[in-house]
Length: 103
Image (tube, rainbow, N blue to C red; front, side, top):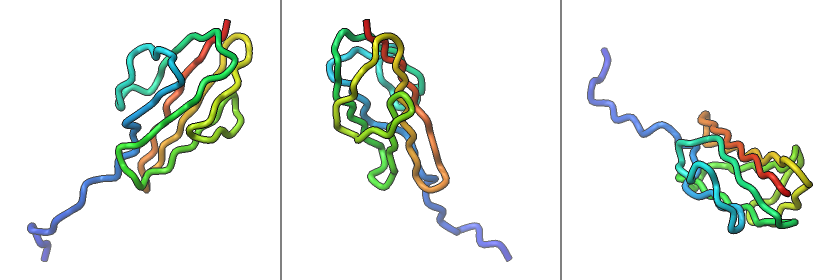
């Protein structure tokens, strides 16, 4: 017999609560439910910092296909650079993609 009073926990959340790339302005402005951004820079490097809504979620950052440490400076190549941030929390996964154009 089914128990209609079973309490079920909230599903896992795999979204960012913070995304900062140095002093760059993201377009559109950061929101946890927006997954694609662009930014421009003339800087050689900018620090990439990401945090999640859930402290148990895992953040993996890649810059131009190479693993990158959260909170460390990324070295930009001339032209378009791709930053991919994958957030995983249990079975939930979200992917954020930022194109940083260095001129």
